[in-house]
Image (tube, rainbow, N blue to C red):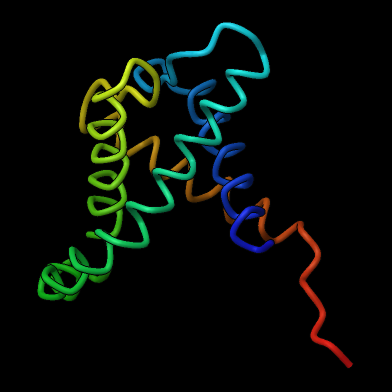
Length: 128
C-alpha cells in the first residue's frame, strides 16, 4: 500500500513539474484515463530508477557529496530524471527532458512537491 501511495505522490509531482516547466513533458495517451496511466507509469519507472540506480551512483560519488557539502544531490537527482526520460524514450510514451538544466530544475520541483505532499498525508499507525 505504501509503495502504491509513493507512486501516486510521484505521479502528481511529475505532473505539476511538467505543468511548470516547458522543457519537461510527458507524451502519450489520448484520453484523460490513458494520460493518468502514462503519468503513473512514468512515476513507477522513476521510482524503480531511484531505488535501483541511485544508491549505486550515490555510493560511487561520495567524494563529490563531501566536496560540495551535499549539493551534488541536485546533479544526481537530475541524472535520475534524465535516465527515466531515456528509458521511457524507448517507447512512444513517457517522459521527455529537453536539457540538463531542465532536469535539474525539474528534479528540484519534483523533490519539493513530493516532500510537501508526503508531509500532508497522514502517517500510518502501527498496530496496537
